[in-house]
Image (cartoon, rainbow, N blue to C red; front, side, top):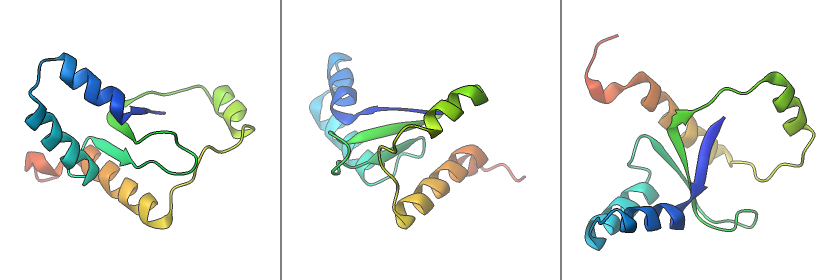
Length: 104
C-alpha cells in the first residue's frame, strides 16, 4: 500500500517548517512536473477533490484479508495508460536507485 495525501497539506507542512515561499514554489513545480523521484503527483480530476502526491518511499504491507475487503469497494479512480506507465517508470527508478550510480 502506498501512502498519499493532498498537496495543499504538504505545502502547509513546508510552510510551518519555516521554508521560504520561493523554495516551496520551486519544490511544488518540480513535483508537478514529476521530477521528484520519490513522489508521484496525481492532479485533481473529477473523482479526487484536490491535487495529491503518493510517497513511493513510504510503502506498507497489508494482510490479504484487507485487500479482499478493498476489492469489494468501488474504485476511486483509475490511471490512464500514460499515467500507469509513468507510475511504473517512477516506481522502477525509485527502487532500482539509478541515481546512486551503482552497477547492478
